[in-house]
Image (cartoon, rainbow, N blue to C red; front, side, top):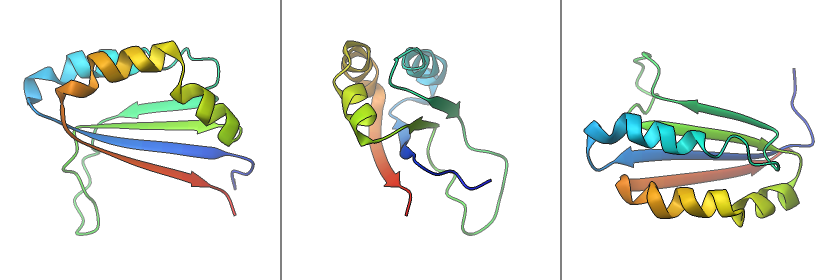
Length: 102
């Protein structure tokens, strides 16, 4: 199925300390109830080993929005602010990839 009319927000997180994985996953889960989020997937690297697969990250966050306006509202939601202030400091690196359909 081809997904249309969607704004995709995909974030990969690398933790400073792997011992914080469960705490960080609990933190990412606070984002799920934000009203602007259409669908959300929180995951860790799959056990796939091919040369093109980057498994170096610790946590993946994939969020689908109806449009960029919903994404932009999510970015300033107070729950998102709590996540950024409390949990993102556990990360050594964060990479965000936003995409829209063509």
